[in-house]
Length: 208
Image 1 (cartoon, rainbow, N blue to C red):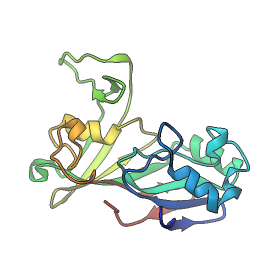
Image 2: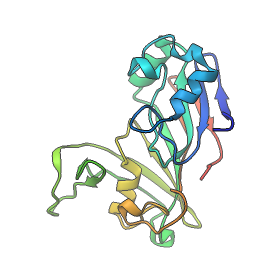
Image 3: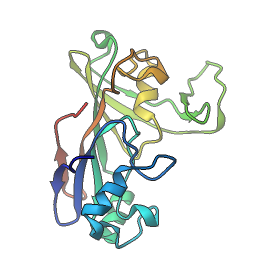
């Protein structure tokens, strides 16, 4: 990774632009975004958030998803963020056949594991095989035109936006796992976070 691009900072939080095709945190891969952040910002790892090795990391992005990745600067800020029910994360995606998508809407199908790599939306009156208990989720969207859609989620679960958009017939470009057309990259990017409780209104351009 050539350089870390900082896109937001206040007294409690700092945000960076994660590139596509890079894991957020440690796994089977040799490198990850958290490891790169630790080299330049070791002060973000002086307390434990979700995991000791992740410091103040507040949420993950899929390997293929780009955009805003936020860290807390202290434990109090971490706890306030993770407990905030008003908070929303904002994403933008390029989808298939956006002209037929309503102007606004909410997708509320529960999501469950279909396999180790794939999730599935559990839809009423449709027989779907899955593992474990479905997770209640909700994705609010706004059709921006030109096949672009803005999505708003709260805590979110793995592949939530990808699965939800695919479930209504509008898979994301580059998301071949869920029926999207082939592309060099996944056209999904986290572009902001809002919370009145935390006095946060972060907005950045999409980076897919």
